[in-house]
Amino acid sequence: MRSVRIARRRPDADEEHLVRLVAKGDRAAFEELYRRTSPWMAVRLRRRCADEQIVAEVMQETYLAVWRAAGAFAGAAVGGSAVGWLWTIAARRLVDAFRRRAHHAEPPPEAAPRPTAPAAEEEALAATVGGDVGDALRCLAPELRQVLQAMVLDGLSVRETAALLGLPEGTVKTRARRARTAMRKALT
Image: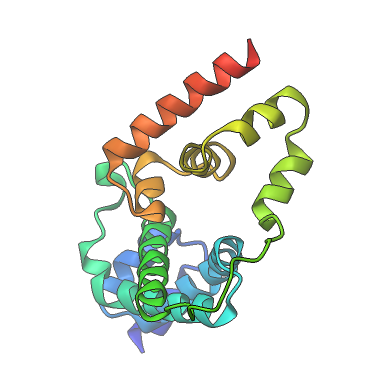
């Protein structure tokens, strides 16, 4: 009963406060956190994975992890945000799902590589970033372009990018620096 009153009294509570209430076992706060964050979470996951079953699985695993580990959320004390923390969990779960899928899915030997259509992100990138900048982006190595897209277009931090791509933070920083250098060279 108390948790319902808290959620009703604090409809303006920010996500960090909601996570802190979830850590205390407040179901109403968890429901409110889910209501606020699940729509954008699903959109971001769908941008990286077209398989609705995997997206639904990752969503479920993410919010289960939030319920279980809300007490471990450090928040603003370490320069983080609740939304960033949620996305980091989701990105890790997505990487795990891709790894599970790759581990269990062996292509039949008779399957030959077929030409593929460009990814939706590639098409969006081409539509929004044209001219010399677009040409320079398309010339980048895929691993550099991934880092640049995550950090610049998605606005993720180094830590969030590392979690999303399953890379060490140092590797993300190195690739970001290499990508910027290559972009400068291509644009001069």
